Image (cartoon, rainbow, N blue to C red; front, side, top):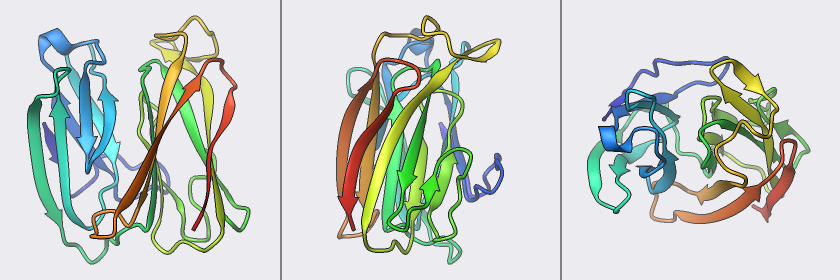
Length: 220
């Protein structure tokens, strides 16, 4: 496992400063959601390609960062620690991370900021300084929203079960997913990588394509 760092090899649209975390699962783990990818304490189920390889995007902030893979029994398989000291990267005051447990489903996160702006896949960057660092479209997430200088007021976080995909591309067939109920994990992180860091994690079930669920409203 390695972080393709510091230059992101993938840059979709206006999303900048993304890093691709790459590695390979063992033969016994291939095709199974038995491993976890944990980045700065944020855990996500890890799926591999048929050959066991995986690639997950992430947006690292300033300071000490860690990436590790844990097996189903909780053992650390690989861990990488590095320090980001670039003046061009600032620490987000608000970070919202979404991941889910079905590698053939596409879930979208939506965030509405206090001034009424709406960040989602078709409008990833807001003019108030917030936006999506990562909008994952290749299964299980993550999707990441961040603000470095958040305004005060009420924020709303939603998740939408957008559809499924397979070798033929996107589809909206409810039979084309791994399980009946998709477990979606949303983590709110405040002042990440600082002594004042606080976090909250919520699990939300999604059952039908088109489901739009309010996960959390919070005041900042």
